[in-house]
Amino acid sequence: MARYKGPVCRLCRREETKLFLKGDRCYTEKCAFERRAYAPGQHGNARRRKRSDYGEQLREKQKVRRIYGILEKQFRNYYARASKMKGVTGENLLQLLERRLDNVVYRLGLACNRNEARQLTLHRHVTVNGVRVNIPSYLVKAGDEIEVREKSRAIVRIADSLAGVDRRGVPQWLELDKAAFRGKVAALPSREDLSIQIREQLIVELYSK
Image 1 (cartoon, helix red, strand yellow):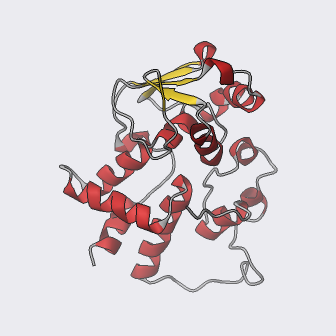
Image 2: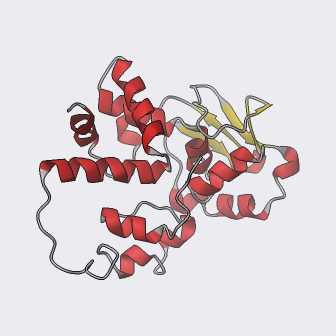
Image 3: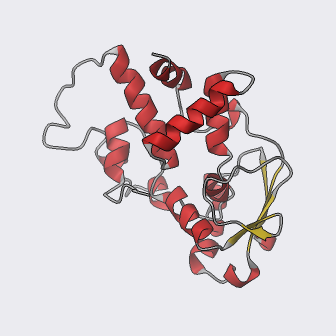
């Protein structure tokens, strides 16, 4: 599947908010968005025209896609599934995205960012309930246990990521046992568990046209 492999700091600048795509670097003074909080390109620092309603909706959708690192077709599939679930469509969409295995590995602090979490999953370093799962889009359920394989615990990047987990924090719907390289899904994520400001209603309006 195609993936964006260019510089990720320009994505934060394009969306005019920190998307935390570079892991620990995003929490330091080296963060590119902190130094240049305007759109990339030759005219990025120029006065920008007010966006239309459609422009606002599109940018919000792009922001969420870039946060979770998924492509348009996959995102549409998540929206279609969320619209068929009971409850508020926008909140259902965010819950599905948060339940992705690569996101849970990142949220637990086993990886510094979602790209790294996706790689750990693809390379079979992670198990769910004792079974190796190499599908980043696998949806976890309440009660699932996510663990780093014993042979993989010597990987330096995993240890470094766990060392900085206190700075990033672990959401309330997850439980982490740092010493055992293990986490548990205590409950399904709620809307209040999202730390990044997302206006999901704009995405619903975009796809409802």
